[in-house]
Image 1 (tube, rainbow, N blue to C red):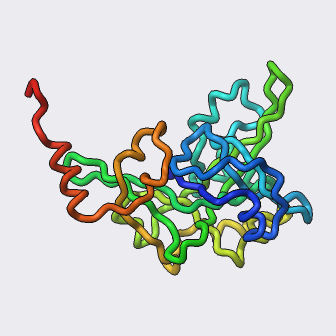
Image 2 (image 1 turned 60 degrees about the vertical axis):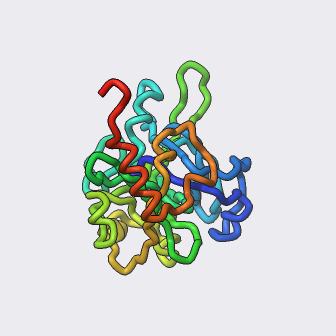
Length: 240
């Protein structure tokens, strides 16, 4: 799964990377984006590609309320064509989510150690996403939302978690974004990619709390800091 990520670059910089128009207000550097937060995504309509700010957690157009979106922050690649929530978006409304890294947790004894996963060259990791528009019946306002597609892990990620986001290589961006692409062409992209080299680094457990959001969350921990965290987790409390 993918339930938290960092997105530090402004819309203007992402627009240059993706040859897109920056049509979103800058959200500022984000180090702990969580479901229901807004984030920058890349969307293409016909020949026009743009950077927008959508809410994380897909709300299908037929949903009665926005609450369903808080559960739909990930879409399993294996069921995209059969899931009522995602199959229409997979056919016509695909997007890319550029992140500076996503977080995943691994249980090590009594501690769930967070890791930040990104590219080794410092460029954004481009995740496969789907988007949808939902009209709020109370206000008539259209809310645009997205979800991140996940698959089985590649070899690097298998030791951390049994799921990972689907990463879209640059040469595949046009195919994924083009609304006219055939779904049969896209299914092959949803398999784990072992040619992808990831930077996987342990980080502070401050990221566990969605209220924390700062550059200290992405600082790599050394072995000594990790051991201190484990010791603190097992230390007896005052009333133990």
